[in-house]
Image 1 (tube, rainbow, N blue to C red):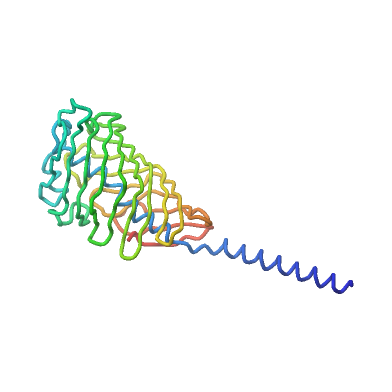
Image 2 (cartoon, rainbow, N blue to C red):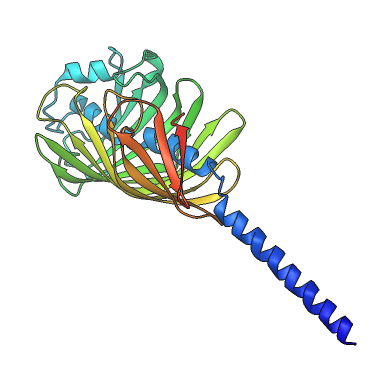
Length: 283
């Protein structure tokens, strides 16, 4: 009887040791990288749509925008394809807001950041977009980047927070966003404050976008993730996020801190998790 009891204790102790060892190994060896990559794919394109729309506003009546028409032509690859659809451009009739459509489809050339975009941006101004507290509703129609990734969403809701010569700021909510590539898709939603620094000049290529806020989504493997964004930046003349940090927490994994670099325009980034730093590309 004593031998049996001793053997039972030994088996239980061994089992507990194996379970503990497996748990410790799972925690220490954290190889989930897809959430970091997929968040970056969605983030770096969605974060520039509102500043682009702001530059399109110079072609609308009654927006009081001060930027030059040449800037829009530079941003769109040199062609003018902003089309008025309907609504009161004087903003007197609040029940009939002005609506526009910008068609990248006629401007396939790469714009100032070196990215080729196709498709359309649908824009509705619920009040003059340069006025504090006014909203803009944006929708994407067959919107593609470099012909490989499609970006869509139910809507992008923009509220103007600040507007001056050197700085413009909006609260931007991405509602049910989806980023789709060949054989995969990423779900993405966010609530962010986006600041556009124009450096008080009338050219686009020295503009810098800075973003803080939060996001959540589901990566291409079906794993949910949450995000806290801390001052990431994207210059207008670079296709990638170049600086700032983001905390990404995939479901059932530890939080990993993504570092986008020190301002250099490249596709290099790192993330750190459980004391390990891993390099990845912003593709």
